[in-house]
Image 1 (cartoon, rainbow, N blue to C red):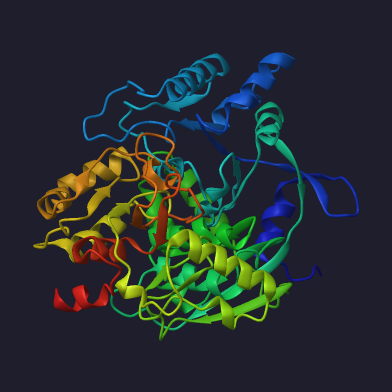
Image 2: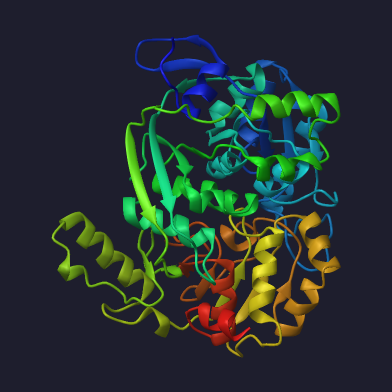
Length: 473
């Protein structure tokens, strides 16, 4: 009788072509990949130079999302010459290698980690790799996704396989019930603050527990998406009835008898009773408060009711130096209440938090209110389909009435690769996933939080507890 296995072990075992050594390296079969215009050019150039074709073109979906402008009026024109060349070369490569492309004017266009799930391109049990670290998002569907580099993208396109080293396993069990105004973004930020930005390095995380089960599928995507900010190379959850219901109507999900056969298989995708994890972490969210970052790493975070920490209290020299550098860059002083931090920008978007449920949360906060006069507030939906749905539900009108810019889909200010860039010294409340130095523009300062918290900050003009807005509503 075989030993109990974790879901991660099942994913890897079922996709191992052969074992390469006794150090955990295997040749791993990859079911699907999503390509974008930013991380793929060198890979395609390598294929062309070697005279190789793409082994399974239908296994790749291509999306323009990183460099395209998000101005309210969508056009195919790329104002930046470098971005225009990237998109043109991407289009050329997709045409020549037979890969389906959602270009800027396609109604299905959007951020790859929003588009792939909403199309049903990612299914439970799949192993997915892509040239973007937030490919971990797909774990919310019971798939196993991870980011890869350019040379690996080339290898994957040519062979549909990757040389892969097995990871250790970490189970994060989340118990308790989220209170009003709390979201999955607060949960994952609390996890990262607890274990550190490198706390899951070398691990694949399985999220479990009643608080996870209670979340919607889109909320679970936020958690898996940001798990990489703790160093995890993969994150996932066992698929359940919510996942199956989410996928059933998707355009590329199996239909008819194929759906029934797939469902029977998917229902077996969970860790066996008694399966052993290399590490266990327990998180209780009963008393969790909305989270915000104060520093320049996602683990430099605290509850909105807290204060900027004093590096002098740190006994660890490395931690102390990191905090001092972060506070210098962020222009904050120890002991300052986080609720006193004034912002002049508010950004809602990214592959972490730009789905329809995120936008509904924002509308509940800002309905009937106005953005503070000194704040520029932007909402960039995760896909064109999300944008259309928000407009059909009347959410866009709420945003515009409140003074938000309502823009087209794309990565936008998450990484400032197009014209959505902050100026030096700007301070932004942001629903994105990274607050590194210069991430949203050289010298810009980023505070991560949930979309609802960003909305509250935009209205108040400073970081604030969204729960007062929720209770008022």
